[in-house]
Image (cartoon, rainbow over all chains, first blue to last red; front, side, top):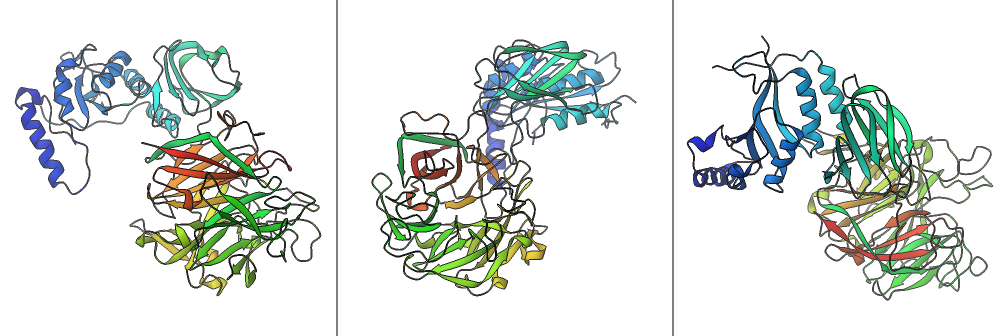
Length: 129
Length: 471
């Protein structure tokens, strides 16, 4: 379960940990909790989100069109934690979002690359309408 | 902005191909290779399984030069509806596979078809082969129970038991007592064998002994069924009872029959005198029965198939009140599936359902014990081929599952293939192994095993100490 997106814009790490602890104390069943940081968008450097993700159950990032090298770097950034790439990868024709939109072929390759690098979760979507 | 729901994909089969390929292939502790030759490679180190994925490729390279034997391989075109191309066996070399055309190819190399996912409690067995002991050469089986006098008891098959030979004390079925600790035990022939305390008075084989309130019970299959001059362990199962620690035995007047899809069983053993079962399991004694591949198959005779791994493999589970073992066959309730809450349902033989299945096969014998440290039932049986060391070690929180896999030995490295510290004669022929519950201590154990050495090597009583490699 994710707290929300781009939390680093309005939540501190201390508040995030407090939320995580509170939820685990009160939830009736085990549940993995995360809260997406706004980095790194592009590139392999995940260092700005490391301490953020260390207080959560899984590490979560905003990636735009991640390559297999980016997936690999995200898994290495916080060793031992599952990774969720939590920006929806939409199949869409949008000038505004072409820097992060997908084609169906990119979706297929993304599935394979994110699996073959060790298993990164993603959000996929077909949004042509 | 608003929420924009996703629409169907044009090439939905791409996603299905990805999903089907990774079913049973994406595993715990599979790691990307740091320097793949080309593309991406996931490698399961312990089990020697590889997945290779390359894009826009007409040639796929893989380096198997560190393997000791060839491995089976299949290829899948990730752009096409799911179809496996059988590539046969890849040699243990650095090699290149030429694809029929350029595409995004995925290859699976090695054995991926273990029946249940990796265990969450243990990722394998560490065996200390410097502790390997061997006794009773020529006698095999030896599934043991821990009785109230602190000794282990169990049956052997053929030859003379402890200190016996083929010409000294040979019996078809013998019964022994093991006194002492795992590093200094001694075996004694109670019933049959060389210089026995008592003479055996029936033949057969057994992989099932249990102690209840100081009395011993043993499932026995016949050597030569009534009216037959040839061996057929499959034909029926009888229950024998001893009130004097194995010195004499009395059989129940009823049988389970192969025609009922029940053959060669084992008891689920808990602690000393079968104490220590979790309350949730109730006051029952549990028995696992193998399902014969064909309910009319025979071991020998005109249509004999020998002792074999039954494929596809199915195991049934029965329970009976602990004070009613000998009373009546009808007192045995069989696992018939689960209700909507996942609880087991119990019913008649006719309605039984498998509690364990493996397409690669099970049997012809098995063992089951409870490990209190792991709080898991541990079941051991063979797969694919008999007497090749192809053992599977499975665990479950309940006698009825759900099962997961601790070890699944394959041809690449069968059970005991590498034994640092042991110089005893060896062939990869182990077919039976069990954990005597007396010798469980935390995560450590003693495993006893036996093989098909025809009077040599593992055709004997063997023990080796070890520990579960915990997660």
